[in-house]
Image (cartoon, rainbow, N blue to C red):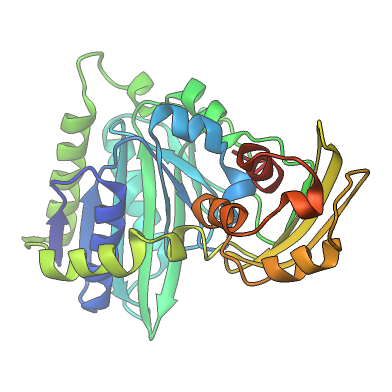
Amino acid sequence: MLMYISDSIDPVYNLAAEEAIFNRGKSCIFLWRNDNSVIIGRNQNIYSQVNLSAAKKYGTKIVRRNTGGGTVYHDLNNINFSFCFNEGEYIQEFFTDKILSFLHSLNISAEADGRNDIIANGKKISGCAMMVKNGFMLFHGTLLFSANTPIMEQLLNVDCDKLRSKGISSVKSRVGSICDYLPKNESAESFMNKLKSFLSEKFNTENAELNRYEIEKLVKEKYGTWEWNIGKNPKMNFLNRKRFTAGSICINAEIKNGIIKECRFTGDFIGKNEIEALENALVGTAYKRETVGGFFRSHNINNYLGMISEEQWLLLFFPFE
């Protein structure tokens, strides 16, 4: 079996690398780490899963992965593993057992829990997900060496009372740290090297090189794009109400595939023009700050909503940021 190790800590690059490896259709193992990032499930809505203000504050990258499941926080104290294999060759539990065997070899009393977790002393130390395409399977997961729970709580806990998402919501879990069960001088790097050695022995692996051309192509066309990371959000509706000098304005909008499909304004604002004209003009606009801001500058919004600024206009449309 082939063994790939990423020397990058960029989540965009590594998720592209994982797909490039998967697309080759050869059984392999891929080990990688990401720096400060939030990785959301394929079917999830960023606005319901991520505190975007906190992500901006900490410079956290947000990237959508190919598999389902919940949103997770990655940093250099989290090790990621990926197994690619023919669907009839192995089953998911086979690889879960190998990860458990590795943890047991370090005297960590870990066990499988639920559909895709590994726990130690009742705390989650690993989460897994999978996908199948044309009979070829990807099974990947995390090994949380040291959990930065204060950052996790800020990035992954967001109040979305006004959001009705059609996507899947993550299950909040109590997380633990693998390092708590290891000698104090153990590092994430040495732990990852032990994992590599263990898997190399069990699968008799052969080191392989990543194809940077294939990876950069996927970065450019998919993982580094707004269309994939934001535009793939499930259909959602949001309601937001603000009071400005111009009056009270309430917006009720439907967003699908990152595009405004419907938009309604209500309130006690006073405008010269009929509000329906503005609502109709917004349909088809990309749900991006720069695009919605550009719409404000290219249309005389004050004729519809009274005297509001571009900043106030954006506050109406992006209550999650």
